[in-house]
Length: 160
Image 1 (cartoon, rainbow, N blue to C red):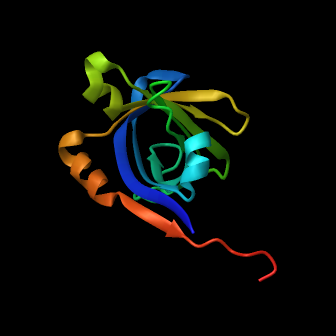
Image 2 (cartoon, rainbow, N blue to C red; image 1 turned 45 degrees about the vertical axis):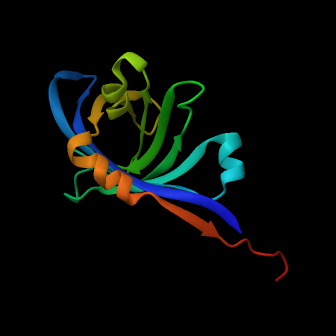
């Protein structure tokens, strides 16, 4: 049996395209983050993430958002940061990446953990936009805490 955990988190905010820096667009992200093996997590500190992202002008075909997946790396205690590396498909069929990280600062603990600065990269790996996503502790913290669940996963025996 492998021990792990899962939780959900949601962010919303705005982004701008680098070629249109004065025009803000809406962006929303809801993630289900899961860890299947604590032993591996202690070493790698990577969690799998999947959910929905709505990126106005890029991925808006469904108002609820398009599927997004990737990793969230928990480097909070030693490097004081939580990097996100997520991929999704835009309305034009092209692959996009959302990469960012939450940085922890003791003098501003609440804001530093509730703001996710990120960049949008197109299918060539070129940075195309920059975003600020926020996690509102007044409305989202209770839901995130309630979503936390330990997980127990059975290992499969090879040849069985």
